[in-house]
Length: 297
Image 1: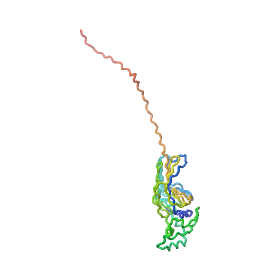
Image 2: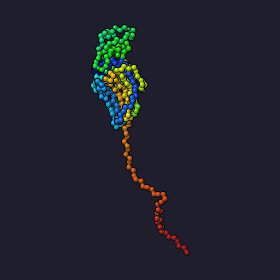
Image 3: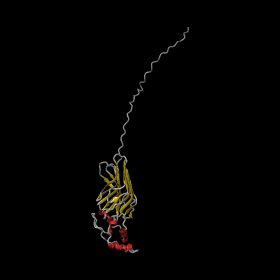
Image 4: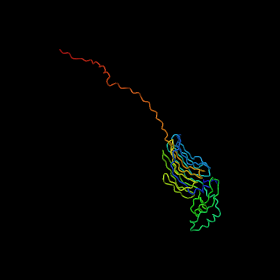
């Protein structure tokens, strides 16, 4: 069931017009303590905290799998299903139907003058009309004052379409999977839409960046090695409001392989030493044989 976004998060819609997508490889993280292989589907920190759900951890190298059909009740994010798996130096996550900010723009009140302007747009030439600079309401997030020019539109018809027929979510992803094995991993992302617009994700493994708004950032395929030999890969990290809310989707950590038990040696029978070659065994005593010989004379 889709849940509506709390009013304190509505302003995010006005600042997520252009989003950064970065594929990064982070520097090693200092952590001397060995960590187990683990994986989780969703977590969030900020005004709407969400614990790592579902979460799987393998302490002894045995395969562990956890699934969840929905997240704990929250106004920010929903998923249809998520599965996390962790094993011996391996981990993976699968997520389906992720929705962030459901029905977000449908709650924004459109100024009457803008609504009137939108209803009288000409059929031709409207693409050249400028976007009016109208303030958007401050809904509680620690963000600067925003206006209609902060929305992801190029002209007035785009703005009218966005506000009069609002999309069902701020961000929607139909599927997301992440895996790691040893110190390698990969990310597979299905169709992703931002405020109803399909976004083409970078195809390169690292170094790709799209033009950005400073208040909403999405990192894709973040990878990092740790000092204990483990390796972590994260599918998506969504930063809303400059750190006000940070959502992590699909993260897998591969620990170093679990130690195999040392087999116990089997006891052996004592060996009897062979006699030296220069002292052969004594010959057996001959047995006398009685016989009669003929006498001649």
